[in-house]
Length: 234
Image (cartoon, rainbow, N blue to C red):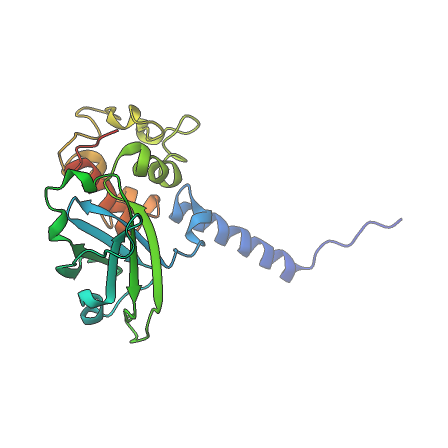
């Protein structure tokens, strides 16, 4: 049987170009290239403090529409007929314009609201092009703790590069104890109550771990608030 003819030059060039593009993308995107392609969920939410909730949309928002509190409904899952009053809505996302912070004065200083399942509904918030985002809802647990909220975030975004199999920069994010390590040098990567500790700084928008981990603005808010507001609790 005669040998198969080699691929023609255009095919070889196209294949080489595709391989080069993929390799270049991997270098630019870091360890977690596949997640770059995954679309964000329509809406996410997390506590920013005992009296504040961050709501992240999948698309950039029209500021005036996003900051209208009447577009939001917030209520405990156990009492859906008793929504809480939202004093204000502020577009806090300075990078993408996707995260709105809702202030709930009734929750201020109320320890009973910590660790409660709460639903956020959004109605008719407009995107940056003036189109309605429709009706969306998400349920989350108030408060931020490692087990309840942060472990999944670190495992999903960080531990592929900072875990047992791969320890870039000698930083580990694959356990609660590891997050308080020193990395390449002291002080500790996370210092409870300190919003200027190394992990928070590296995860700020446009900084190295924000880019390499493909973090969203809400991811950064969760890391910062867990450390500074909730004292990096377990």
